[in-house]
View 1 (cartoon, rainbow, N blue to C red):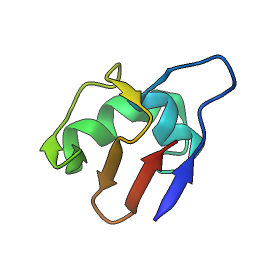
View 2: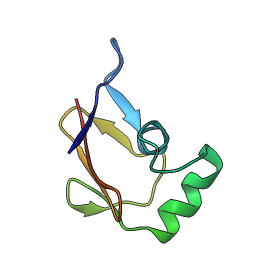
View 3: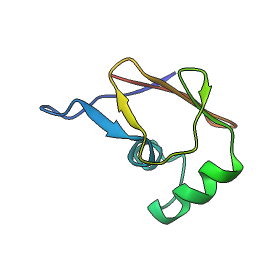
View 4: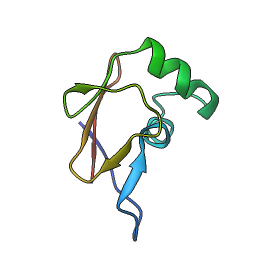
Length: 71
C-alpha cells in the first residue's frame, strides 16, 4: 500500500489532488473522466467527487492501481 503524507499545517487533501500526486491519473483534466469510469473507493465506500476531502487515516482504493493511505 502506498502512503501520502499531508503537508505540514494541512489537515486534508482533495481526492483529485491525491490521484494526481500518486500518478493514478496523468493530468488534472482527466480526473473527472477517471472518476466516472473507474471504481474508486474511500474507506470502502464508492466515491465519484473529485473534491472529496481526505483526512489522515483515509484509504483510497483505485481499480487497477491499488490502495493509497493518507497520513
